[in-house]
Image (spheres, rainbow, N blue to C red):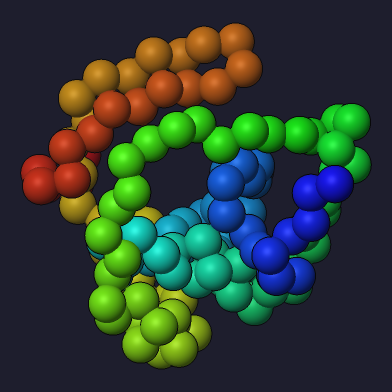
Length: 120
């Protein structure tokens, strides 16, 4: 009997085409710590008139893995409210990283990156 905590919830497991991910400029680089990044991504998706599809539990049912709680980002709401101003300048197009390893598998590609490196 799972129900979304709020209607626009966009966290957990998402799937997007490469074209859509590039269109919305990926995830923001402003969110570190817990909270806000998924809501910011939902705003990016909606701002580009893309649809969010939710499948029924018999098709897409997930159980959260146990993990240590992360400290909440105290500025997450401030960054979330100003996010729309940054959609075009904050994301894939200003991300600096170095690819450490790449594995192409049948259903996905696994990338391990170092976010402190120069873009490669």
